Image 1 (cartoon, helix red, strand yellow):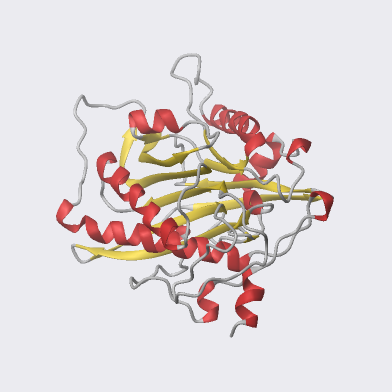
Image 2 (cartoon, one colour):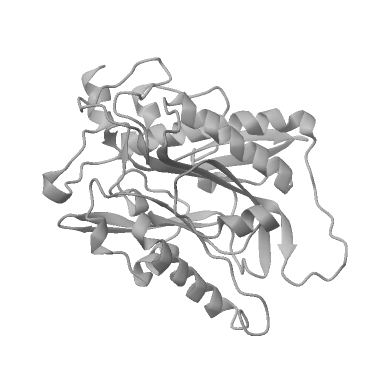
Length: 341
């Protein structure tokens, strides 16, 4: 798997985590289910924030919608309540309902009381439109595929043309799944902020590398459309307000790559921390939380920016070629970088 640093390009100045991946956050896992059959190039990517029962032991979470041209599920409740109670699934636009059903069934298997003796569950699914390189009308993703992605989750993250990223396009190049992380020291303790992106955005010819070069995919320019989903994860002690502010800084990382959030682009950031858990059945009327000082939050802001930028570049560098409907394909950024050395 090829990443941007393999070409001697180092985005940002902060130190990375051990894997330089979102799974540097302890306990977090990522899995994929990839579907490639004829003109269908699609799939599901699952982010499992923590082991155990997320419905009973929720995570503090936040959302920032940069441009809302998207069809995601569950974000309204996350924004309102500041909690995440299911794994996160990424997929194509027409599979949001299917993946939502899969998450509901997954939660019911752990919590049979959902919808009967306790509240319903809020499945979180985000999407991008892979219709350029996949027959999206085939409605190929099944609930079994979503559950397969959850079951496949591990600490090593495959990038590029896998899972939800199989048919995605970024800046005229083949896009997909990418990840990166940054380390932050707080009170002499190492913390991590990691990003995972589903990159399917950007106008051909607009990509800007950290060294200033502008790779040319040799495609006719067209309106910016598509989407990018950014998932930020951290073990920093932050509250929902701080998380929302951190999510907003992922937009700086997207902009560094050359995007301007066009009318037809859905640019959404979802963040969570593995600290400050929220019990489904609290035992006290008052809950205590840990919260880092705002005087130190600039480190988290920079980490969100840098990790997002690098995750986008990793997505495009790791991508492999796919052929979609009517023999549609897109060039590889890795090929351009090899030629331009």
